[in-house]
Image (spheres, rainbow, N blue to C red):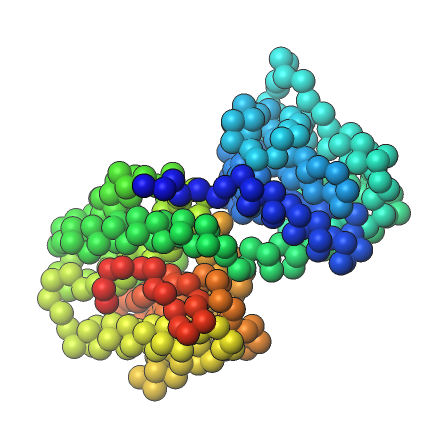
Length: 383
């Protein structure tokens, strides 16, 4: 069986595409920051994901990219990174820790080195407004009176269209997530703690090869399904007639899945069954609307009209589309006001939520790939 991974050549092609965008935008380099929880941009160019520490990747218009890793992750960076020039950076160390045996450089040193080779008049920084103060302050001090440009859109646009290799991996990670979700649906029973149900699903996905779980699972029952987000607890056992939300996913080769189902455990009531039916119909209507060339707001409208007609309009609190890839929620996001045009190769989750109902809440979510003529649904668990 062919190994599922992003080949080395594709990482090289990504760097070249970034450089082409830098040239178009008149930028001299782009800086990407990642951490343990939001590492998508850094992993996109290097295949490296930091643990505990920050990581920085710098792609200059001329020359080779550089990866900066913290001292505790240095060996792992050397083991996994597709970027060959790796520096251990003191600015990325865990604050307060000491590393007397590790030789490190500073971020300022690396920026000065790049600036000496080709003056960095205009430096692009991805997610500039979200970067920690130490990073931005260091750049501004080192590159006094130069321009820092928010270059987020460059990376968003490149990452939004998945390659055939990426899509193959996403099929696999959604298969893993679907297996976990099926286990949750099958195992849920009256008297079971939410944490026990979360453990059953996580264990199934680890066994299928997940490198980690995609996010903190939402396993909620009864009135605890009312909020849009929550954590499982060992203080709540499933009761007869409870709605139970299972919102889970896995990570495989850096790519995330994100699936959700809501079920009724035990005795079913008419009002809860009706709300579930509405959410499922809304999700399916949105999926049926998807194809390349469609405006994303039309997809949202297809779901929202069903929800509003059923009287649940105020309970549908967010847009029904969000991107998924190297993060479990990533660009593009799309709701009723979106002007985004869907393109072939985009990967989304259709996520219909009805929250703060008198008896709790509901979330139904499928992953899919946008195709020329429709959508390839990646979540395989049935209704």
